[in-house]
Length: 549
Image 1 (cartoon, helix red, strand yellow):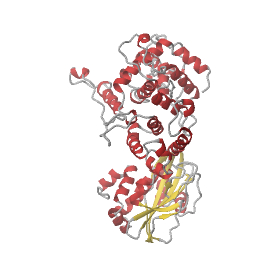
Image 2: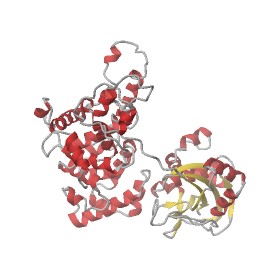
Image 3: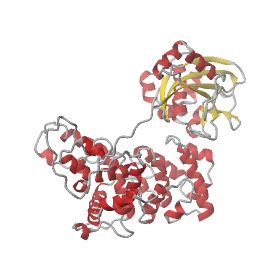
């Protein structure tokens, strides 16, 4: 992390007395408001984003001009954050460096409430670094299913093998050594070192950047390299030394217990996740609002243009801005950091083939193909598919209509791709499984739009039931899998939705009556799991084509 103008600005903006105040207030707030999470050593019930829901509830009650029923309601204690149902086992997982590492990797680009059940299942299956290092990659990927970005799972496995071989199965207790572990970068090394080992290492994620940008009213988008360097410099200045908590004497406070560097780092991230959110920050309940420059600019009536200007010495209280500036929009704390410029989504047409077969005992099987070892979802089992760029000027909705009606080259290209005659895409499997016999029944599904990795994909799924018995297995690139065992395969969300879409046709009575009967009799648990992952289970039940398993 290179030093420079950003480090100098951070030292100017966050002087010792300001740092002391932030530490004191934030650690006190964290102790009283932190979420109960399994990787923190807490016992169930756990609280995911319930704290943020409480903030939204308060905003609706008090911040949108709604009349209060009674005066007492203004002073009533806020309702406790809704908690998730108790998980099993009831006893908490002991807090560990390994658990901290796993949770930090899972939490990258994933919501807390989605991570909680995956973390619990993961720790039951791989309770130690050694247990993970000795696991099969397919088992690891299957356990990761539902979290997305599967490269993280493979890096965890690779990192666990490195820790087993180089450190005897114990994570090293220094950020420098942690950064040598595959998959551990600057952020994760700082998080594990501070949270698990109490070292004064800084952490910077999207939440921390947002908090820092508002504390300093710092211009720039969260993705700007300059703001990132500035945030790292501020984070290093704010994190307390080892064994030193909130400096009560310097802050002029009393009765505040000492906290660790890990507590402070978690407090910064927690503040950004639950109070200082990207949209509608709850400034009224922020513990550091008294030293927040963005908040003071908002209170002074600053114009929105101030979000792009140098505010000068942030220790100075801004003078009130002139009223009546010709109706110019006013600045709010939410103007920091500046919105990132979004890249235009690419549009693609995807043709997928869902080929079903029946084993000798009548159990339904589905044919899957492994994706290439590089690119998106590398090495994952998926449906055979072809991806081609959508014609220019033809949006996904229009393309879907053209595919459904067979009008134009889009429909023809998708149909050719489904039988293996289309062009092969980069990073995606193409073609069809080449069954041993012609399909006994086939059906076309209605196209739908799927957003995946910066692309708007118009997906057309073709379902078929092959004639003759099918056998479980194949090779390492293409094989028949039992439908009831799909939850253990580690399918992507794309594959789950495509399979669910293919299954919906037969169960609605549009052909494939034999498959319908087999799925209900044998494959119900697996199909229900796939439908649940694809968020179609409730729709399926309401439509009456899938009974409760």
